[in-house]
Length: 289
Image 1 (cartoon, rainbow, N blue to C red):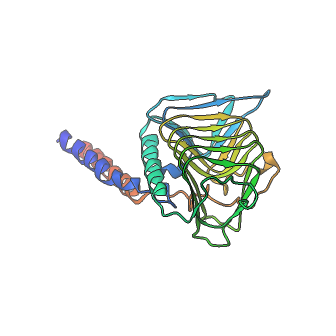
Image 2 (cartoon, rainbow, N blue to C red; image 1 turned 60 degrees about the vertical axis):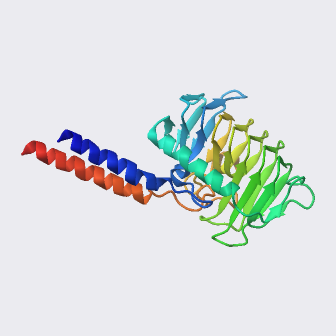
């Protein structure tokens, strides 16, 4: 009889758990609850006396098992640290699916050879922007949602994304359902004092130089490491916007990390939880008979 119980639980996990893995350009699946997610390691350092990296949202790594430099040099709130557990594994699978989906979208504008922030490339409207190889950001750019609650910005980058020191990504006329995605073919590096926005899904690694902040978004490294130094990262600006630290109330605040909406349990997860509770309750009743 015990084997039958185990079969029921295993079947529920395999069958219903698979339905939580859905991802699209406006939905990161379970990865939506993460602010930082690495494949090999997540490291945090500091560059000045008594600095701190603050992450709002889950932080995880899988299949690697190394998370270093947090407590006291960094803190995680609004979530927990997941080290190669089922939550991190599912999140990485969902993020990888989202990466593939983003990479396959039809291109609205080819920006190959152009520099974001240079003359003529400072203001953008919703669409899919493509770079055959590397992309650079110098200065500031503005992403204008034009008041469209269902619009997305997607930047498809063939190799690397780099930002110059002091660069900025500003967002206007968006809302809680707005989406901003940076699909990066290899590695992303945010330069010192960069103020960034959107979800970085890098196939290899993500590096944030000192005081580079993602004040509305996420940093995901799908096959490599995430390296942090004195950074602020929030995946939910309705809950944590760091304005009391930066002194800068930005117009993009109010978005759920630019991932298309609030984090909600997937239907499969809800059903699986209900099945699990029912089975446990039944087993307990059986023992009392």
